[in-house]
Length: 260
Image (spheres, rainbow, N blue to C red):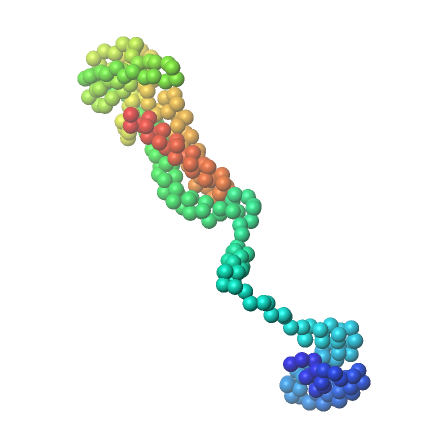
């Protein structure tokens, strides 16, 4: 319903006609005169219409907006119509905001972390088993059955290590160390890793090449820290993704040290 219809007037009504119509209809629809809810709603519409039409500037704007009709565009060729439709579809396509990586790729990061969560949990269990295994290591007298010299070449430097096979497993030492038929080996019970070796109880222990010696310690401790960092939700997604990728690298290096 337009404002003119609310006052029961034509669009060319004068200001005097508007005042007379307003006074007449207000008396008929005033809430004090009739309890009809429909009359009350019409009373509000009459007041709203009079506020607009009684003000010349507001009436002019109302008439202009009510009678403005969009001009019909000229007929377009099929090719132009397709181009226009393509441009409209591209404009309607949502654009990614150029914000931080966490906001731009939040869903991808969440999917990545869900996939890597089991691997990070297994990595933490592996590190826990290594720590417990090291604490439970005991020393045994083992009989040497065989030995093998291994050549290493790293960054233009070459050296030899010797791997010994015993009745309980293997251990690796530098090739220039003297080893007799029986050796005191400190070995872990879970993974069977040799930690130290000595020929007699009175001699000093010699570290064996293992996951607990040298760079091996750095690998599994680094795996522990990065896996814990990547699985903790208090850090942001960027940091957790980088920690998860680093944990995968440390996991591979730790497994190489453990099973070589």
